[in-house]
Length: 181
Length: 181
DNA sequence: TTCCTTTCTTATCTTTTGTAAACGGAAGCT
DNA sequence: AGCTTCCGTTTACAAAAGATAAGAAAGGAA
Image (tube, rainbow over all chains, first blue to last red; front, side, top):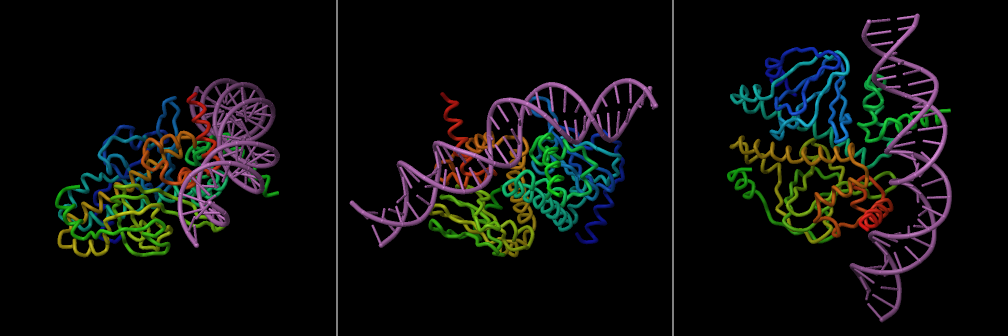
């Protein structure tokens, strides 16, 4: 991302702090928000038929929290996004940014492309880990890729991100621990 | 996608036919190809350490086959893309298209955004199915979403797409069949 | 601190999956 | 046709996962 883009982005960014438990984005929201996490931890989750909350993704510092549904598909958000710790963010309203950036289409499109690239890379890697890896391998990879999340997010959230149950993750952890001896 | 975009795209598209077994995109290719499948069936796959081919995705008619790595990340393709049947496609070279479309940045960016949207939607839904569904549910959903693929692609390919083994898929199928009685 | 709630672990049981191998059928080839 | 190769199903066994419940540990609030 070049300097000009960053400057333009920051001009439309505002600093904001969310307390633990607060929602950055509520389910069904159509606000085209983008948050850049300076510090803290966020999770996205949806509620399935049995009214259980299923965590979909975890966002540590330096991650982008994006209302995907709104920005990409013009539909209300499937997810809620909740701060798991006191979380300081840069908040960017994509819509306002987009309107202002019409004068400079190149900057907008550069940023848009970078954003989409970033999201696609993450989500492709995730599908790969589901296709290629076992749950245990997936957990090991997750620890490698996101060491800053382990021991900060409850394991039950991490379990759902990995597509397994919390009980199963606990067993995987003890299995790994016993292998080391 | 608006008419103008389609026309511009088609002007840079060429018709091409791949015989069964031919590769549309070879592993490590950096060609920024996009194929729109008019008829036929394509699979993407990679080779893991044990030199097994793992099918990653199946593309029926009307799907877009994209060299994701090259177009998005400027890296060589992880996957090979192989025609499973005689496959007729529109081939679009993204790079040539991008160069020509600099005169009309809006059209380019509209198309680029639509392409990214399309890819993101697909891959997000796929992650969702891994997080929320059991293998059996995933197979049922796949049959619903891609009925035209079932009975055309070998089950072993479909199994890998769903993140399970061919043997397990066979058991799932017999389980489903016995439930219907 | 104490109390309460949440989270993690453990145990039991059932179901499902992975692995390896064998079988049978279908498809392709000469 | 005959042959081979590939694919899918099935079987048997071991390993792992889901569900449920109970107990231990950790975290928060008063």
